[in-house]
Image (cartoon, rainbow, N blue to C red):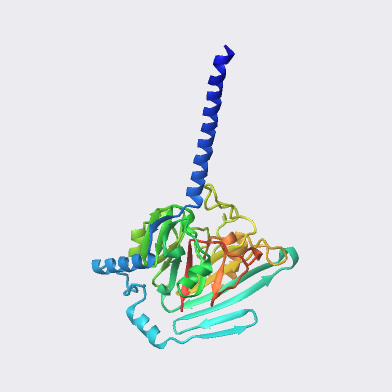
Length: 340
């Protein structure tokens, strides 16, 4: 009897082993598909945006300040091309860039001491045309798991200034309007919208649609959060709120490296990148601390972008902050930038 049962027992063991291998293989493939394998939805973003702008123009629905394919009005673009002059001035911890259409001042701020030291960089930006604040995508493609360093994306778009965006490519939801073109319309959270009139507004994605936002004059949206300053007030729940809780996301609470954007007035923005996780240089900041920095600078509204290892500020060919205290960038899917 034992001789009859041994082959059967071996067969059961083999089946069990194969089942385990299949399960592990399925998990590994899911992980690779979720975090590593590129899924390209738009292979050539620049061409796609030109075609989208042309389609809007043909339909008679082109937004007022987007007469040319790159989003700039033709008169402004022509004037800039003919008369643009730039000056760069460095004084102490501040560096300024001024052209006919743009003013950017980068200031390094350090507070505290020892393990409580915080170091962050403030970019005070004034534009004459709201469409000069653009989005750049990793590899000039739109999709998931497509990444490049912030500096690489910035250089590919001839940017003078850039910060990392919302890392849209890590998720498949949110409303993503970029450079006046709808890329994704999957409402999920509190977003931020940049309008062609130079305003920036916090909004509830679930109460809007991409088409409605575009018709109202939205030029760019970002979907991360939370909103950390609304109408001059710091929301009461930001010290406990988590934006995403799906697999792979980390808590945004506690002392963290952070990137954020705030608005002072029409076409007057503040971008802040706070370094962190580097004892003696910068511990990072909490969301309430981050909000107070924006408030103290005179912002009425402010929004938290992707942070941690993603937090990067690029200016005039260099990364000005120190990502994670190691001077090492982490690949991201998108940036906000201003070109020369």
